[in-house]
Image (cartoon, rainbow, N blue to C red; front, top):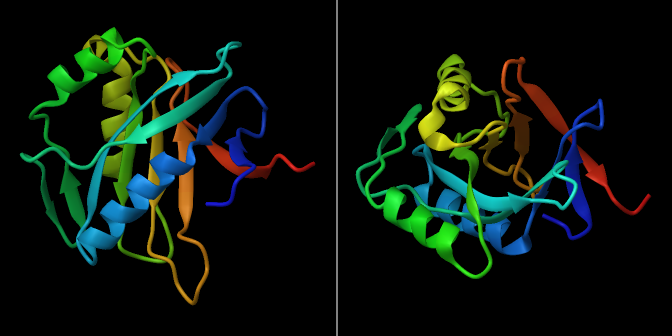
Length: 168
């Protein structure tokens, strides 16, 4: 991921920024996983005006996760403790969504991917009114790793974010 790039919805109501470190964490996990799906949670915070999600960490799959060539079920072992530590730290961060790797160059979220995010959106235990989902793919022919990003506003249909250059 190049610096100076972010994502925004067509209505300009929601934005997403990935730190270089969080993108590198995703890339490492995708390389490690090869032809098997993987994923994890996104941790971060919102901008001061609450319009933009800033992803500071993309965590690897918990050890109780299960996966195969065309499916992934994220586990939960250790997440409660980890998220409690992030919330209580000097620089507070928290759960803001999910990332998921499809080992293909064309990135299409599945119905299961969407169903999981709507379920998270409706589950008060997540305390996340507008979770984000990143679907990451396999790079091909030297092209950057494909990525699609979605936000799930409470009580509304999901919105796909578009990659946007901040260079104007």
